[in-house]
Figure 1 (cartoon, one colour):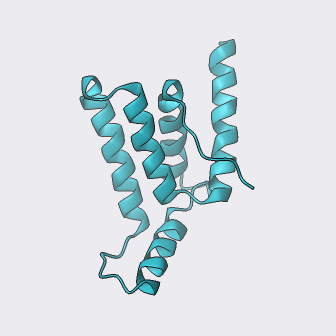
Figure 2 (cartoon, helix red, strand yellow):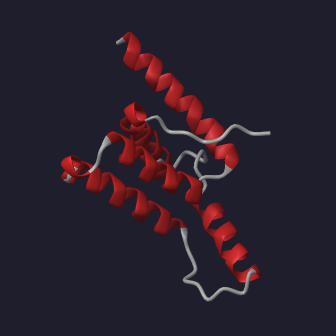
Figure 3 (cartoon, one colour):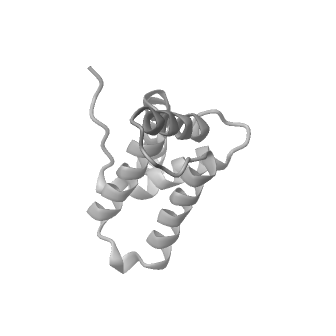
Amino acid sequence: MSRKREIRPDEVTIWLGVLLDAAFDPTSATLNLARSAEAFNSQARGQGLDFQPQTARDGLCQLLALAGDFTAYPEDYTDRRRAELLLAWVDRWMQPEDWSRLSSRVRKRRERAASG
């Protein structure tokens, strides 16, 4: 059984950096937003829902919107709320295998921050 996904409130900035790097690095296949969009679309079609088809661009835009809000309005979000919102994005857009790869990147950045 896989572990429940968790983003600690004190690590939101690290997670956000890792996610933005993975989402916008054209040489990386660590985060596959297109696959997540297709999974969402397939599930919605299978349930017979009337829905707006999603694309990888929608995931990027939503991630950028979170980053923009966290930057422009830091007083509007507690660390815990930022973690909740980012985790909601992760639950919607990140595949399980992407989670494990990006979790290891977060661990490496956390270790570098602690030693530096």
